[in-house]
Amino acid sequence: MTRAEQQRVKLIAIDDDPVALELITDALSGEDIEILTSTRAAEGLALVRARHHEVVLLDLMMPEMGGMELLEKIVDAWPATDVVLITGHYSTESAVEAIRKGASDYLTKPVSLSALRERVGKFIAEALRRRRASQLENEVLDTCQFEGMVGRSPLMLEMFDRIRRVAPHFRTALVVGETGTGKELVANALHRLSPAASGRLVACNCSAIVETLFESELFGHVKGAFTGATQDKAGFLQYASGGTLFLDEIGDMPLTTQSKLLRALETHEFQRVGSPALFKVDVRVIAASNRDLHERIAGGRFREDLYYRLSMVEIRVPRLGDRKEDLPYLERYYLDKFAKEYGKVIRGITPRAQIILSRYSWPGNVRELENVLGQACMIAESETIDVRDLPESIRSQPTPERNGDEELLPLAEVHRMHVRRVLEKVAGNKTEAARILGINRATLYRLLRQSGSDQGAPDSEES
Image (cartoon, rainbow, N blue to C red; front, side):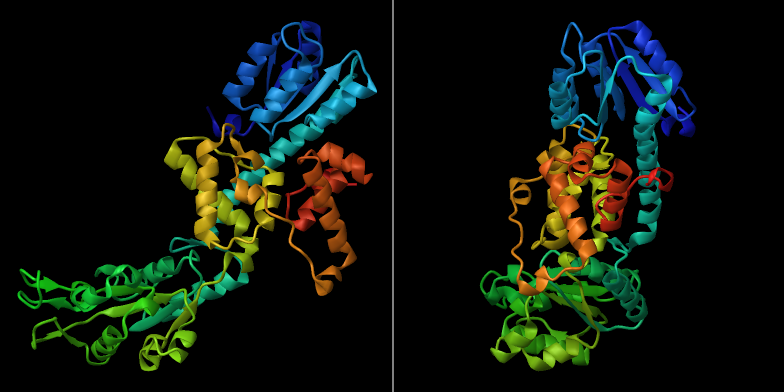
């Protein structure tokens, strides 16, 4: 299959009337669209399942399976698919029911060629836009990545620039930030961009080492130094010589070990436990902490002189909640990652699921986002992540309470908030949302694009 063929929008028309299918094919054929037809509901459903059709035209009255039942099956399994119901027996009740169940539009037979091209053409154009936007997102994603980290927000760009500038020169560095923000990724970047990149990067989790064994683990020991020391052992510091030692959660290091680490940093020498011999060491040290080290200093649990020694270079990793403009890039990055890992096709996230993700506070930061999207990709039955694929804790999050200051919002923001609220109430059905709001779909797309919830329709469709 050529690249042009891969980019074509897939449309299927399901109708037990062959003449109607011929009319649809003649009216909608074009270079950007691939059209399949079926006169049987079960066969049509199987084709949708196999080919991931983005637009489905569906007759309401069919012998095997009713159009409403088939609509529910398609929308439930592939929420990003636009389904247009076509019927020769119009009723207000059936039209309302179709929209409520997720239909994007409702047409009455006989449908003129011009009406068919106009009404269905909008969904074809939107599917093309989504494909091009997805391709553009992948291209932009390449420019958003820096040494395994993803971001284009001012906070992240500032951090990337700081890493670039200090990596060639640092001997000690302190990386601070909440759990899950990516402190180890920063340490990896500092190491890879430093003159010690050809050496080892050795990671030591200070919170996982028993206090009585800390000095032995960090500096090593000689045979007979204590009960159980049956042979000489090199510690983390010696093992990392010529490279970089990463001390994660440095705030949990015992005070007695802190003083010996400070001396090793100042003299570039250390002693193994049980030996007076001095070992020379050439190592860069990166410490990381999710705790407030100033509070620990004030409480007598961390040495102030060690803090100043480590923090000659300090890099603060921002919370995900402070850089939510990076969410779309992170989502794309993890969807691609887990799609490859699980051997699945994951094309994107529905707008309503994106709204929920954008409103969440992310206390676990990027690590929590990775876990959420990993689970969603694992259990997703369609090629698009929807609300039902998200964990219950994310789906059921309460609406944040607003204080008096937050109520004083610009009028444009109030409009956008109301649009998002309506869209959530109708489970992401844009046609129904536009009807409730009293605007057309193109205007709705423009508002969503301005709010960052959707890319919106092409400018030529706006009104």
